[in-house]
Length: 104
Image (cartoon, rainbow, N blue to C red):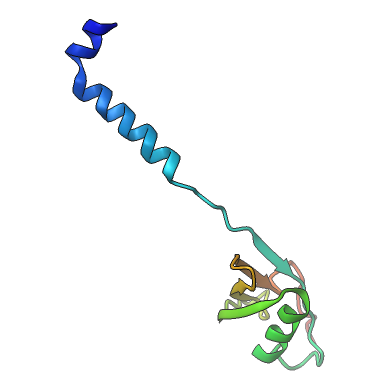
């Protein structure tokens, strides 16, 4: 064992450094919350104020960004970046389920 350590000191240092770096890195996976929402008036899209008030009833904190990600089949989809009071970051999708608007 001693001979191995003497022959490969660079390899040993690299392995120890990799183990130390791996233990320092903490990977957190943000969970995406999906909150369903429906239109109050079926002909008008959901406003950003309705989105924010819906989030504030579920979570405590502040909205960092709000982006509309609408498609033809799902016009009310919004993606929200949210920071809770305790410091936890949340990704929230609102109205992005499989619901479809009835054709009139």
